[in-house]
Image (cartoon, rainbow, N blue to C red):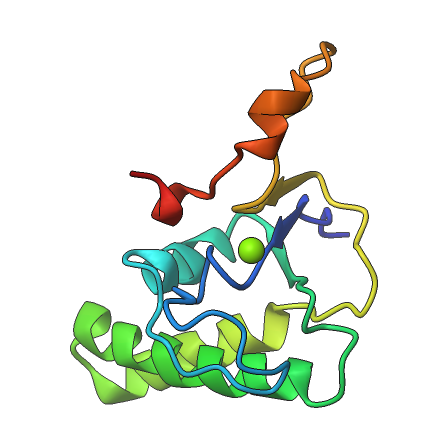
Length: 139
Ligand SMILES: [Mg+2]
């Protein structure tokens, strides 16, 4: 039997979706991908089970909106990457078919999120926490 791949949980806004416009509603996803995000997803799915989990996930229309966006942008990237329409569609189909869209926080091997810090055993300073800024909002 094939061994299950470790689960990589991916946050959506600020990790895959650039989220330049901020929150417009759970079902509104209009910004481009973060540079490199689609290429990352196309290759990461070979080593990991991918689960996209976001604040949108539990809201009406949220998952469908993320799936539509993901499909469209994966295809754009795959067409550039593989320079072959048929191969691009096959790769995107395989990738989309393997992405999980849980409505609750998945039990991940590791998570990529733009609004988290890695706990190292030492609790962070409260002022540092209050001053937290995601990577794309830093000066
Ligand atoms: Mg985020």
